[in-house]
Length: 139
Ligand code: AMP
Image 1 (cartoon, helix red, strand yellow):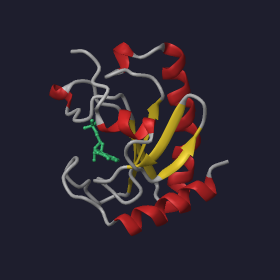
Image 2 (cartoon, rainbow, N blue to C red):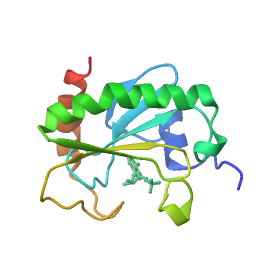
Image 3 (spheres, rainbow, N blue to C red):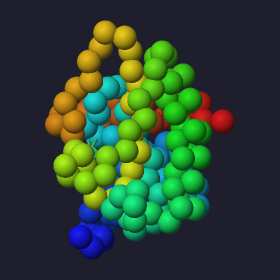
Image 4 (cartoon, helix red, strand yellow):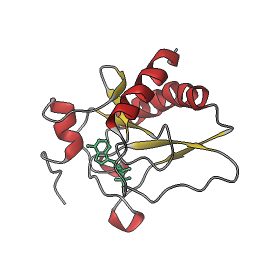
């Protein structure tokens, strides 16, 4: 399948759709997931038109990993959780719903189940606060 320039993350990268940004550099962007599976669920995307890991330029794959390493500790600290789930889905059979590659950073706490994937829209005021909290903790 050819990369769809009108997918929601491509629109966010072009500035045609909003996001609650936590971090940006030349090769990546990180922002809050609007339908979080746990409070603090954050995404990292490369600034490269690829649907999945197999289409992604390796330099951008490395940049995405680097940004995950930078943002995830801030998410962990901001939400004071013992664990962080890092996930990256390739293809609808794997559960991918947005076809611009991205990595999920999801806070995990023992005994608290994840909410369903991409199901319930969060309160935007809350997401804005969460983004600010994470942003302030990024080294
Ligand atoms: P995946 O199923 O791995 O493709 O994940 C896509 C993720 O993007 C889901 O967790 C959605 O909640 C999230 N999502 C969809 N639209 C937006 C949006 N406009 N801004 C932020 N996150 C989004």
